[in-house]
Amino acid sequence: MAQAHAASGDIIDVRPLGAALHGRVTTAFIKSAQMELVHLVLPSGKALPEHRVSGEVTLQCIEGLIEFTTPTTSLRLAPGQLVHLAAGEDHALLALADSTALLTICLVRQ
Image (cartoon, rainbow, N blue to C red):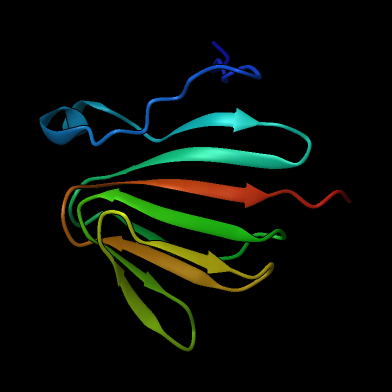
């Protein structure tokens, strides 16, 4: 079954999941021609290995603690903190605690 995305004008709930985090999975809230908005669910210890995307990225920590690394730096994102990454830059994530984050990807038309 295809995943339903939010429509224009829909309210999207990005509040912390708390204890409900363990029953949830990462989902794409929006996928349009210009952007993708993803709710990342990262149980403690979950890693996303080094990768890159063709568009610019923002990652906002909603709850927990996330280690965000690039070839030149390592940052710890706490709730309410956001990081921007230029297009095409390598990066990786590691959940240092049960975490959720809001990922925005600016899509580049090929």
